[in-house]
Length: 198
Ligand code: HEM
Image (cartoon, rainbow, N blue to C red; front, side, top):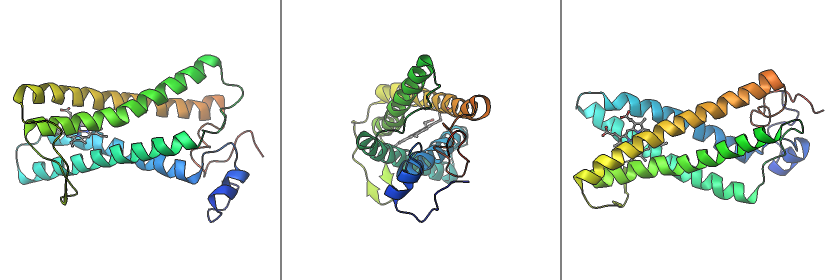
């Protein structure tokens, strides 16, 4: 169990768990993780459906979730630039630190590039995105069939890359917890007991 009660102010929680992420970072991390995993699954499911009102509804939900990922990733990046991550366990080797940093940078790149390619694709295909059905987003490109085909491919491969990176990232976190038995996972999952700290 966490050793800090949940109703403590953020600064005090940070004082009690200095090796862990703060509540804001943890909240944004897990909301993004759920939205990305759900949107990958929805994207893969919806594309193979026959044209129907349900398929069009799923396309809309997919676009809204993707735009939300883009906005939350921007928020997370801004927040992260002002709040350094807690230090990594001392026992981590140099290559592991580089691999973790490289994966995190590529993940941030895909957080923006995958939704942006989807938005560009929708614009070039001639389908405006209306966020949550009420807020029309500007079309980023004029209608262009050839460009739309290229952007669709870019969107699909960026989405697959995002999925692969997220899977690698999650596998590394589980390896830290199960094999290395350090605090890398518990600093992002407050209900796990810390391994090497009081
Ligand atoms: C986290 C963000 C996103 C992820 C992970 C994601 C993922 C996916 C995936 C996996 C597919 C199916 C690819 C296939 O196998 O054919 C797909 C399709 C699609 N996505 Fe996204 N997407 C995201 C954001 C967006 C956004 C923001 C838009 C538009 C505003 C969008 C528009 C589309 C469209 C229109 C398709 C259907 C392509 C077709 O015509 O077959 N996506 N997406």
